[in-house]
Length: 292
Image 1: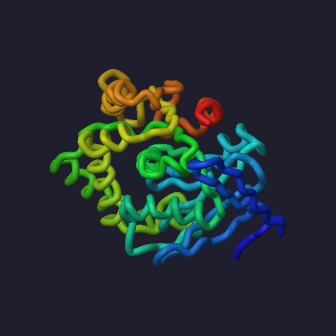
Image 2: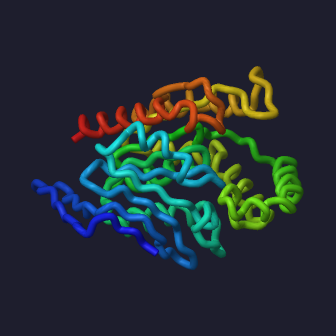
């Protein structure tokens, strides 16, 4: 069921000079509903209006609700598009394909369905990897990207880690169904969740992610956590070693910089340091205006 808050739809064409690309964005009304994609349907929320479009990409098993503080800080000058990925949240439907490539296709599907030609992509954790890939592949459609404690090249996956991941999700499998009605866990089985996590480890490898980041031609800002995660020590924390790999990324690509390194940890960054994320969004958009 869709919930349009206004019936008005405006089409605005931006005049292009000789050799320039014409941009057209359909300014939709506010809308909440289910978007059919492939064999599934995604729960989408679009605040609509004439503001600058920003699309938010969630953590691997997170939901669009995590962005509410960032959205509130940015306010009505922006058009905020959020959605729950396949099998996530309370409404998005199951799918036969939970691959990373399917997730990237879904970004295109959501933007196309909502009539957005160019947008700023903001991703946290798993969503940061998706945002980096989408920005790298779609420079003409990307105003810029904000990557929140994710998309750092690091070879953390080996055969032993893969087995630990599979074992962990098998152990969690017995109570996952109890939480699905709340939307706190995805409607995926233990094997599917493990496969998503393992695939992310492959996507994160230096020789895989490094060229993607090097190819980005639009402004990108990282917001990086520094707090220790549950079960790890602050000194020598594995996540801190992963974050250190960004030095090489920023050295190679002048479009990419670290906007802020904040005190919160990976899991709490959108709750405790949402202002730093909103600030990075404004910073990237200012850079995009300077490029035009």
